[in-house]
Length: 426
Image (cartoon, rainbow, N blue to C red; front, side):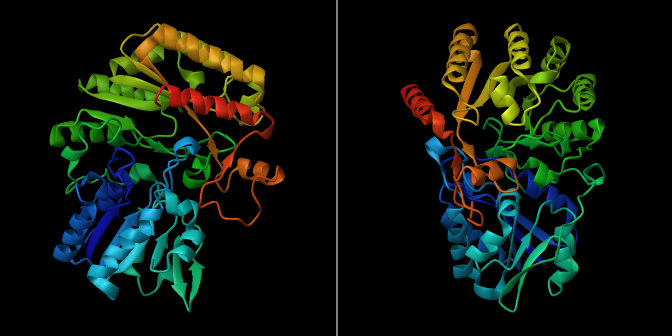
């Protein structure tokens, strides 16, 4: 069969991101003719999409819904709205001759709602697809035999049950053949490298544990660095991002990857998300030597009371110790993410965070960057239950269209943050 994989369209509101998930699927699917299309690296996506469909005439169209929205209340961008627009184009060219399969993290968060909302989707692939999709392609007339599939029968949406999680260390490396990597080359953090899946932490707002599981599935450090070397040697790409939710957990795994990069003498430059609690001086020097030029942190709050309410494992002292460590290391940018008005927010905690922000900007100047965001309420999270209890959302209501948590007792603080961000042009 001829399969066209398509990255979900972001509407030119965000920088393009290389479709790592689709390249993993490409490596897992054999015996089919496969092409790829990313509307986010085109000048006129509709015209180029029509041209590709008309030329290739795929039997299967696989759409990756990576993100539903930008998750930032101050500047919400709703990417999901482009899904039906893309399907309109597909149907106008190919009619009923093509089967449409949708997957990706965004789909897996809202599979029932999306299947109900967009009735032209034939199949939905739930959670990780490396094992599920190849089986579905062999059983399109018998989807009920494949775990992890949403499909339609007699006008009703059916689900075949949760699939097993793939052992990713045994999976092949991503196959980037056929992707226009040169179009992502100069975009910061656009090209991703994966070292593991899973997240052991219990942040109340986060859906990673549902999507990828609580248990870590690690990729052998040598295999990870093989992927990095392939990017550099085959495509001339030396800048990338580790896409793990947290790179330095387990710490021994992260150290092994860094040492492998150094031992091979790879001249690369990369960024990653780190946990504040595990960034001692020696490790920071190691990641710098391995090519890290940007450390991203998401402590989310600077108050122990709020950190506990958010389910975070670090405490204020960990955040400040890490800041003092990073302050002494030149050549690495530091990026922080905090929430504007989380559960437990108070005027005092807001002022302490504001003082930290001002102090850090004065000390590190252009080396440090801050993001202050609202908390999107996601399904399958503890925050969902909190929002229900506080009457912010109703049970059974859809979260496909974004809803946000804000601490009503200190709602004025969110307004202050928004004014600050507008003034600095963020």
